[in-house]
Length: 63
Image: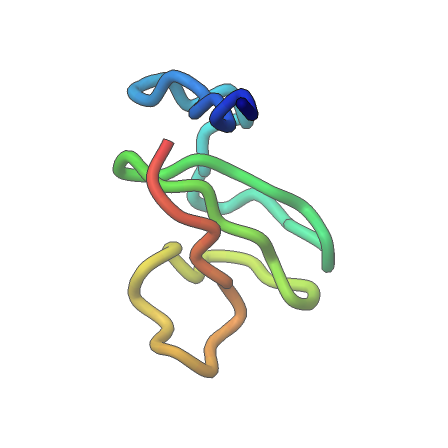
C-alpha cells in the first residue's frame, strides 16, 4: 500500500501581510484577505485581488 499525500494545514498565512504604499518587486509573495499573492512585476498601491486575471498580482490560493 502507498501512503496518501498529506495536506498542509490551512488557516494560517505565513507570508508578510500586504501593506498599502509599500513597493513590491516581481517575485514577492504577500498574504491578503486569506490568500497568498505573488507580484508579477514592480507595483505600489495596487491591492491584491483587485487587478484582475492579467494584473500584477497572481493568486497563489488560500492560506
